[in-house]
Image (cartoon, rainbow, N blue to C red; front, side, top):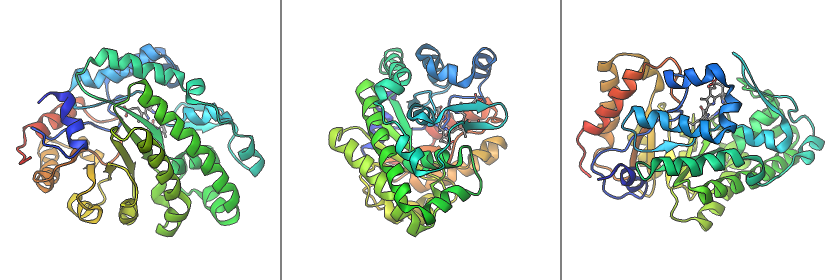
Length: 347
Ligand code: CP3
């Protein structure tokens, strides 16, 4: 079976010869090739150059037997395009110079088309498809509305989400106005990525687990649903992955979405997640990324646990439970990918 069909077959719950595997944040600082480029360019320069973004997207594909590529970009430049002015501060991560503080700020947010604000990533998608030439499929992505709204309101990575929580409590109207705007921009961005050649798409909802279940259903889920429905109505054949962390309490609610694949973190047993979601969904996950900092016997032990629970299932994609950690030894990644492929499965 070709590496291009393996991942897409699993997304469609068809037979696969081996378990497909790719890793969130598979391109990045744990790779010496990436660090070398970072000596000459900032992160945003790399993202905004279609040629360099293509080169970086290909780095893990050339280094490991991964079954999918993910376009090199980030979830935050979209917010820059809406007017929030993004910068990456060395050591501190992302920061917005004009975070949202009032409803006037929300009203002032631009809703430009992706072809205007994300043309560099759309161009990179076209270039990567040429470069891949059918070797493995290319995944496009966007931040999910809750996670993007959190960054827009907090202005940077946050632990407490105190501004977000205050907004949900005191300014419901403003929250919904912001989520509607973000959902329209995200939907257009995902559709544009598909038009440019993305063969599957993933929504990253890294921070949504800070919500209670009630809050999730009121303040986040309707927007996730509207994005997925809109994209699936136009591109029914393109697999749609929804990934969040700390989302175990919401899995039963995610059953109402039209996502094809649910990405889960390591905090829930994969077989439990599957029994909650039911067999209509594919699952992607869920090795704890910290495992890749240990040794081969621990990595194999944790990986076998996942593969044993999924080897009889159609529609399983091996991944980490969150992005790869920058201290991860490259050899551990190579060994993991090989181990997943060599481990026998029944479908
Ligand atoms: O997966 C891939 O290989 C594609 C590239 C990708 C990046 N960011 C590149 C990046 C993807 C899919 C993302 C998603 C992303 N970005 C998320 C969702 C996934 C997650 O990990 O939760 C989030 C929350 C962001 C926002 C972001 N970008 C943060 C908080 C940071 C700084 C912290 C960190 O991890 O360094 C970034 C920077 C970033 N995005 C880097 C890379 C390779 C490191 C930047 C560098 O080179 O210095």
